[in-house]
View 1 (cartoon, helix red, strand yellow):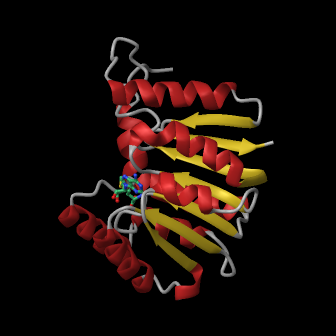
View 2 (cartoon, helix red, strand yellow):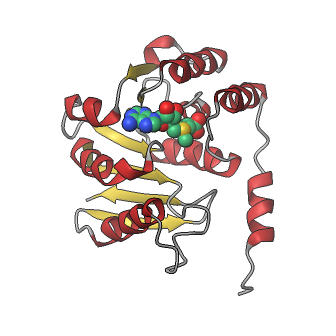
Length: 210
Ligand SMILES: C[S@@+](CC[C@H](N)C(=O)[O-])C[C@H]1O[C@@H](n2cnc3c(N)ncnc32)[C@H](O)[C@@H]1O
């Protein structure tokens, strides 16, 4: 195996052919200073949502709706995406993207607030999929909440799990990277979960609840 994977990474990220809805959501993200999921992660979210056959999904970190549109495109037409963000301007931009994507309003439940306050109000074992893409220092708490929210067989997806190649370098010890390195270890060692780490985007950590 060749050591340098950057060519394959660029090739993979260049493959998705994003439509105008996603390109406009990316533009709004840029204007609001949001970093949306990469095209490779977006297409992976669509496939994972479809494969999971999820009826109920939770997203932590709506942004301007790039990942939400990708999830909605994979979920079936009866499913509902609950998406949480602390910033009302981000939620407003995301709602525009959801409307433009042709998704009926009753398929998305947008909740404004800090995820740490909102998640405890959601019902135990009621969700098929949880996607985490918000403030990194809070990931350990979000993962505990996600395990509580997921049904058996439900899918957990954590974005940025490799933190721009920093997690794999043990010499990098800044607080943000240490949290993400620990999150990976905790999920791998958690007997309630079966996990895999994909190098897509900045790293996509996947786990199924047993
Ligand atoms: C990386 S962006 C999400 C991008 C989005 N998933 C996408 O791909 O389009 C992170 C989002 O998390 C939100 N956020 C940050 N801290 C939060 C918190 N404590 N609770 C809820 N949302 C938070 C930010 O406002 C921002 O919109």
